[in-house]
Image (cartoon, rainbow, N blue to C red; front, side, top):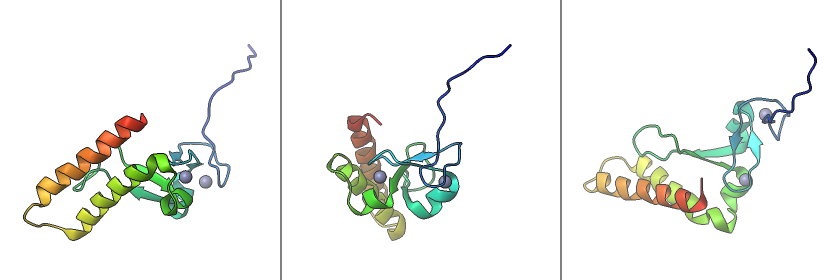
Length: 111
Ligand SMILES: [Zn+2]
Ligand SMILES: [Zn+2]
């Protein structure tokens, strides 16, 4: 049997490779794992550990975020700073607030 199927595939916008891609939340550009390493900034949602709602920003959106993701990028920044800062008295509380902020903004953006 011969059949023409149309299927949706993800193609890396940098090298053209087909496969799993990381999508920039700012502009929707997609990069494969290898290109992501040099062309994207990734942010962890969880201050301690991994999470399924990490955010990826291409370098362009990372330096000048489109208005709609400005708050989200800022929220990720707060988490990044907390990661570097390490433990302090109110660390856990602030981590929780920072993580909730990311969650809330992502929800508003429908991500
Ligand atoms: Zn690529
Ligand atoms: Zn982008």
